[in-house]
Image 1 (cartoon, rainbow, N blue to C red):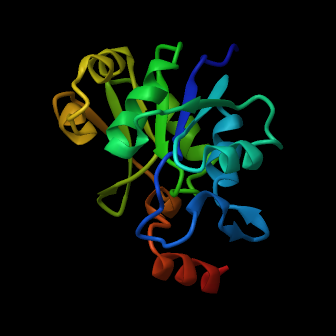
Image 2 (image 1 turned 180 degrees about the vertical axis):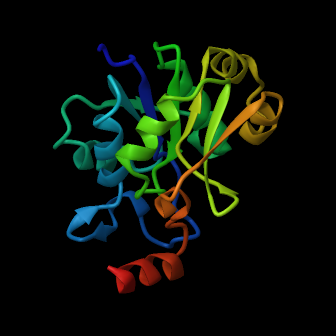
Length: 190
């Protein structure tokens, strides 16, 4: 059976301002945080795109072990996350694509495979009643993201489409390394 051609988009263009240090490079088990979502998406995706912006040379260096990963530079990264969503989406050439922030590292390959088995415009994993990442988006959402103004918010676009919720026991869909406190708590658990 042929595997569906799907793209993974990882957003890694931000300033990491709430963290106080550059999140994608933070070590977790002696591996940079950004490696985790990229490695997982590479197991299920034909192509993985990492959207860069701030500190793009460092991201390029971090992605050196993954020659098949394509870096997409968001020159408007200072305007916020939606500009990165647009930049990454513009480089997608498959009918469906995963979208996730680079600071949500621990979703599983199994979760991605289960998401791919569902159909809809927006497919979102859910753990204990909370939606997480990655989300799987289709061509209709792709087109709306590209045609939206830069001032749009992704959540507004997603709310205009029917969301298929997929329950999972993968707590990793919710693990967001957004602050120093979250990072320290994670390091203590590992």
